[in-house]
Image (cartoon, rainbow, N blue to C red; front, side):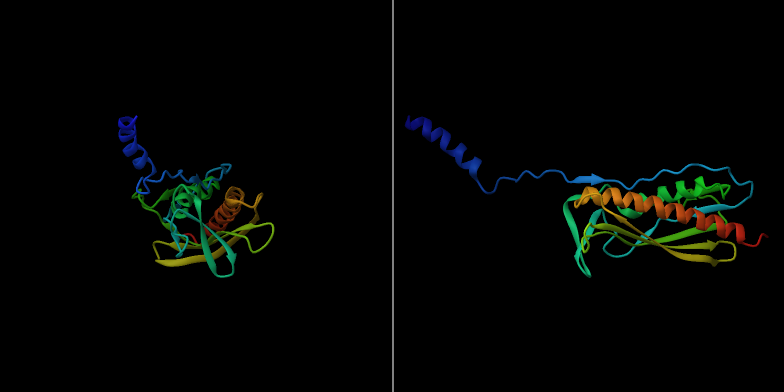
Length: 202
């Protein structure tokens, strides 16, 4: 019996050792998504290049932000975005504006295409706000449409959306965030189409 105890004792001690690595569950990851119906394509020659959105400090990582106190930004520990909001929004912007049909083509900034218009955007805010009940997601984006040939800003606009969360948890915030994205992307596409239509033709 004593020999068996001597054999198993080191195994028991190693199993209880505080130096053993702690198993951590992988965080839940979520994506920003939206869908748009395509309209008839313009017969004009306008090509729009969509730059990768910038993001203000606090919203430039995959962490999901929320607030419980004014001016205090916090982050969920077990829930995060699948990528940074900027990288998720870039292809959604392209899809939204392209589906409007206002441009001959809408491209990303790495295609090398010769575009005569460029869209620059900045994510000003993307957070779940628990200062009210029910909580709500606030998304703010600043946009500038640039005339590439003349090197000037054709127009600029701030877009804001506020959507009530369906539940008081990160997933409820994700659903609300996607509604906000769908709404702002539609408004952004209309903004670009209207500005191109109103711009003087060479």
